[in-house]
Amino acid sequence: MVDIQNLTLHEQDISDDDLDQLYDDTSLDQDAVASDEENNDNAGEGSSTLRIRKVGKKKGEKLRRKEQMRQYREDMNQQHEARRAQDEILDEEYRRRKAEEAIQRADEMEKRRKRQEKMAKQEEKARLAQAKQEEKELVQKQKRFQKYHAKLKARIKDLKVCNVGELAKYLGISAEETDSIIQQLCDSDTDFDLSLWSDDRSTFMFVVLSDYDRVKEYMEQHQGSVKIKEALDDSYLVLGR
Figure: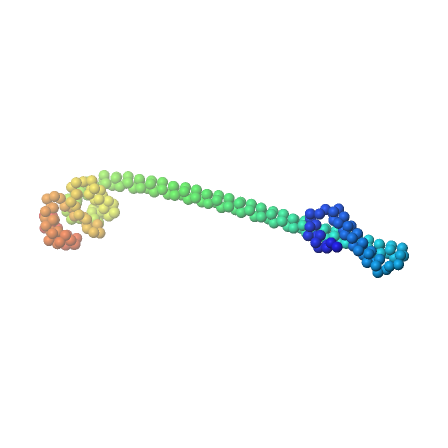
């Protein structure tokens, strides 16, 4: 006898007609066995009514088994369709999520590009503004130098030891601007090659070649290190004034 559970393991590989035929054959085998058993148990009983009743019972059992198998196949098909529908939903959700992520990445990249572009424009604008300001300051610096350097040079040569703040008041400009003009004189005028600054650049000492020997001797006496106040006190001696 064929077990229904064993049949269902291969139900996807067997057509409905093959299954029906298989159950018919199985039923016939079972009928034959039952017939032999009944013939042995009921020898001599040849009633046609009994045989009809037995045939009807077997036919009903066969139909019941076929209905069970049909119902099972239907349930399996429904489960298969449900799984397929669920898989389609999951696939659609996956594609939707990937599409949303791609859109989000594209938006973030566009925002980043715009931020970088804006930052680059701001940096370029700031660089141009700074360059323009530096150029303006350079022009003003050159104008101040041309206007004041001769007057300042004469004043420095006359004083020898100069307080930058006092020179600024004398010229009517800031101490910073005065410092800048003196530095330009040191960079461009050979008369200022031997001149000296105090550490805090508040005092400038104008030294020429004729003063150099006295300054050198004075520095050697102080072991190469001189406080500006001491030099100011001795400036008449040092610079021959």
